[in-house]
Image (tube, rainbow, N blue to C red; front, side, top):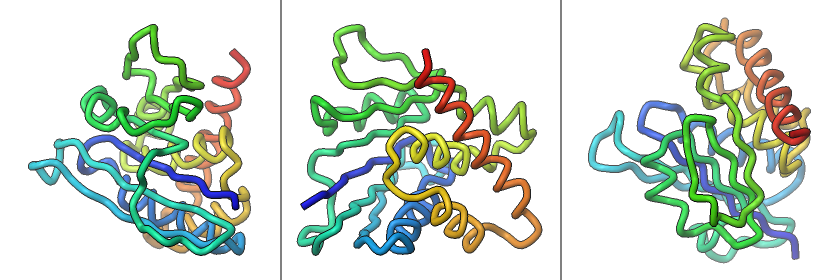
Length: 180
């Protein structure tokens, strides 16, 4: 039974709830089972937040992530708050602003997710979509086609091209990170 537990963490307002919903929807489009949950810190915007997704070929019997296979951290605070639940052989995907102790043994991919959304695209609101592209390029949890379909079904009308470009840049910065 192949099951993947994913935790997306950052600060409130970065769109990680939507990112989790999109990732779960993409998994469903691929014919898998998926469950998405979320929680926020004390502040709705700015506090640490997380969205969790379980993806499985089999029935999902418990809707919470116990120990994650993949952890995305967009902020230092969210990394410090949520990294404890990452498997030893888990994948750690970080915004390049986040630092980790040299003793961390996970597979680490550091990339300019926030900077790509803000400076390359000029739209910080698509940070979550850049992150999804990066996650899927590194992990192959869902197909690119299903991810794009899920993104396009959830983003506001009129932003489809921007979000497709954000996904594409997410794939690109992940490839660059994997080739280091």
